Image (cartoon, rainbow, N blue to C red; front, side, top):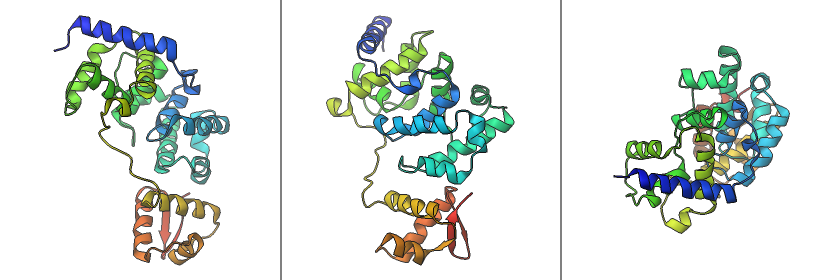
Length: 270
């Protein structure tokens, strides 16, 4: 059982570290819920240094959620390409359409009222924390590792138990700074390598993976104005794998709303 003295000591440790070592990140200079949502989705399984130029370019191109809602699917994917996990671009574009039309652009209201498609509890809470400083908790890989290490917990601890502890540790009225502090402490000091605590899920190797082939196919189709056959794709990308394998990858891309198929020919879904 964690007592109040332990929690007070933990809070002081984390906030002192943050005061001296905080990172200056562009999404920390705003309370715009749309910008914060965008950063949260871009940061999923992608390193901060890679995200920054994409984030800045994106908000320059589509400065409001209404602007993004009016953009074409093709333009959105072109802007995202190279960041990885391209179905995230589809998700944020569809979300922008929903919020723009149903909630008149009020993203915070949408996050409070309903479970939005493709947006889980972590992201919903993160947007409300960083945009409105609400007294909520959310646990990412860094925060999970910190709580386990600092309170000497088993790695098998349940999500419910960890969530309860996170709520006990939250300094009321300081949710935004507290979560930024935890994330910086975990990302720059108490790393996975230092603690040996592994994340619950690990990103698979990109080189030679289906994800790499998906990215190659997406880039190719974004450049084409006509529908392409599997043979077209195979030749253009110099793919040595069997046609069935390419077709299965395309099926996954269709399922993820990235690609359309008609008469065994493929194009980007517009």
